[in-house]
Image (cartoon, rainbow over the protein chains, first blue to last red):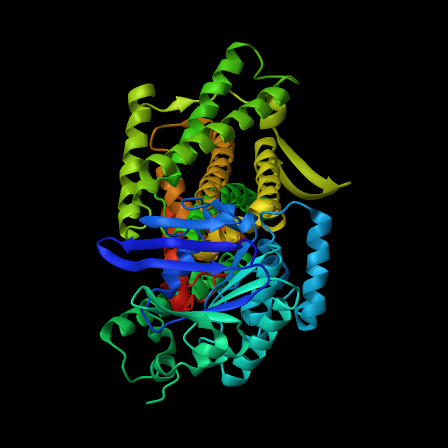
Length: 239
Length: 382
């Protein structure tokens, strides 16, 4: 395979004295859809924060396109195509839908390109266009999810990190949400899903890792993980 | 807090009952005062007026007097509004009340005093050359006040980022004392006078169409109202229409996600202080032009009033801060003569400050979020 787009090499992260990530190795290749599974407090969020430069690892490296970016600010990574859709969407509720989308493109100054991407978001999510002037907080959960994804797309990501996309959503919405993720993936954007809902994530992912108390314990293709008896026991609720 | 307003009998404490009593009394005073005022305007010698004025007839307020009160209320209110913007913006972004903001206003007024006297010595504070001189003065005051606010953030508040909100709040009181005393140390504790304004600025003018006179006001009042309106428009445009303004609103709502968008949160906070400081600086020089006197404690009362205005309008809401400032100024100017005098209260012109803070209490009792404030959801408050 060619060079990974984003990787973590032997990363250790501490919060104070607490050792959160232990020798984590991950590699995301261009255009693939991968997932990181893990229960509560397994270190999933810390992995995302470390990838985005919001947390600096105590040792190891975060590498983007072969360049070591450990210690760079978040804006450096966002500018170079790493974007996250946060857990629970976290839209700017008091700002309009349009302003939310514009903030996604905050670091860009190519007005034409921004307009074109705005149109691209509208064509993917026609509902968003109807709601442009409305405050984001007044939208339904599903519409907010679309705006959150649209906002991330406005940054022209090459890899989209998704933090718990199924968290707190009604089952029907979870389904829609994963369809939206696949739709974005079809545009050639690499996607890294961090999830507790292993079943749903593995049904669309190519590969996955399982994180347990800060350590990667499984690293395999989605099919193999789905068939793995340990995983079935821990995450799919089978005994 | 709001249970007092929703009160359905059950679960009401004595505090709630006490607050309800205060609310009823305050609203009662306003209604009776207003009715007495109307009665007095129709017939100064009516029974109620005689009863409240020891048997004398009340004196009717003339139209010109009333308009004069409105104008002075508006010009003072415009300055409260300008200062209130700074309280509101900092509260919006950092969630604490910067009590040293009144001192930024005072620094603006002091800078104006220094500049105006320098220009006066050079003979520029008169005639047509006064216009460029006063423009340069306004600009300098704005910049100095801006710098004061930015340094304040950097030195006093940034090291406290992430600590409980009560800590920067108390620090701001300390900063306030520090700046006041620094000014006393540098310039002495006495009152400083601005040079006289040119006659053409000081003179009263009558606005009107032909022989129909709308209102008569001093040139300085016109300047204050125009400059304040232009600054408020500029600020509104900045916050609502520019990219930096959008970033500011994003930071006010969710710092973590704002930084995820690539917004530099620290720089945005500095910008907030700078813009708030600029507004206070403009208010400072306008205050100087209007009252032509400044002292190290000049910032205290207008600062507290502007804070009141921000709360009255709904803290964190910029339109509310402006509206709150103007309503507070108007209430302060009008209420003594239109509500209290008809009730036979003595020495009403001394009661302006009491009116301002009573208005604050009334708004907090009736609509705790302020006139234009939104109810904070639980997650916003967290």
